[in-house]
Image (cartoon, rainbow, N blue to C red; front, side, top):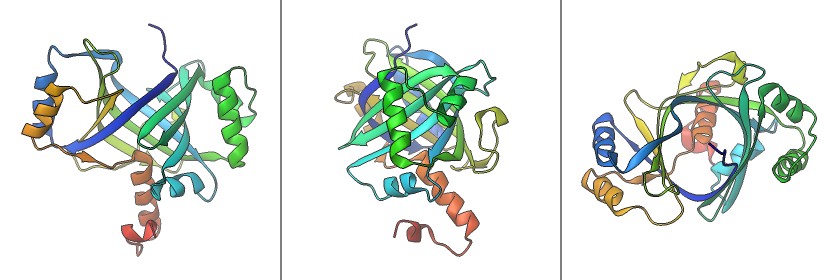
Length: 239
């Protein structure tokens, strides 16, 4: 299967319990198919400046925001395929650019960029623009991913067991960390090029499932600040 390395789409997020998850999955039967990775453990390392300028800016909810991460499916070895990604959001539209390479090659690229394509040139420019970047946060989750059976522009993912850590931040260090969500909570991400399919709109309305603003890195960063500063309230982080 050809790997898609450029995306432009809308992303809508929902949080709900296991009962509503079952209802949505029943509605998906015959309308969606599992994607290339199906059920997988997605591991990410987010890169930021020492003063966390990228995520702090994102939490201010500006019209334009961006981030860089290194992603693998499962815990990688040196020769495993990983994705070095830029994710940008402008006026609710998400643009994702990524370059696939081995884990060893990705670490070397981040240490000393050597662009060899348009996408890697964009990544190198991002790194130069922000100056010093370091692996700030590890985030992993169990994911189920689906495409529309008749619409490849429709993508639905379900994430559970979302974990974060700020120590030993590396994909090869394995999957462990602090949970973001309460047990039994599911994060659904709907990725579409246009309108939400009617059948999906109907089940969301029937189950009273509503869109929410949620960022894994944003929530994990907020939790990390609170854990380091016990007297800080969540609202003060956004002040």
